[in-house]
Image 1 (tube, rainbow, N blue to C red):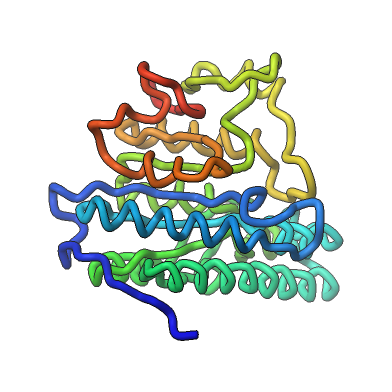
Image 2 (tube, helix red, strand yellow):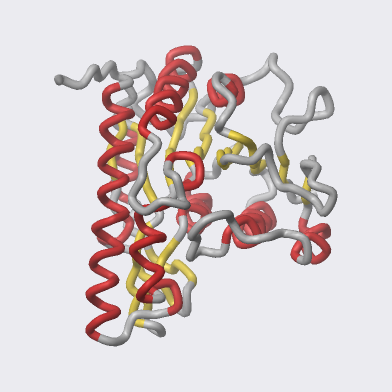
Length: 290
């Protein structure tokens, strides 16, 4: 079936002053069944793709970069080899290649769904250029991202493998990539969508706001993700985003559920709707520098 691509009308230069940059992550737990290997939730991916198209049609000044987790694809492939911790032996390098292939398979599913929904995504493979030092992403070729934005396309990145000059190889999460790209693209908001309604406190209730000062106490209560997750689950996600807002205080991060139909389209749109996690009607968890 021919894809139904309808290019969203927007400026050829996404970095002009009226453009609003938003990073959006579709979590692996949301778009796959992480308890079952290599199982995509295609109906969820299709719904979210449609909501993104709806929001872009309604807000032509919105500049969007999308990322997604590897879910039951990359994580299941990586677990037997310990890829996140390092790649040294021939068996581990074979595993490195298998993880890259699994992550790319899920990315193909997501890419096709967005194109079918009319969102002109351009898949950008992180492992083609990513280099880490001791697990920290230090280099990523961002020219494809800038070119895509300048031509009215929506860059689509994803959790992937990366070379590491200390450990041979490792895995970088979508949050790692967002942290790197934030220094160049200066997003106003970062939306992280998962299965849960936000960051859950010890009482099971959603924590409405997190600042860097809150992180030490929260570390003791944050549990790892349900299912197989080799990148650390919610604890690492929150720590990475706290680091991001400390570096870029102008950015606000929201962690919220992607399971509610229509919510993504609403939160992507600008005011007059109150901000996610705002004082009027708290939705999800907001992470800010202050």
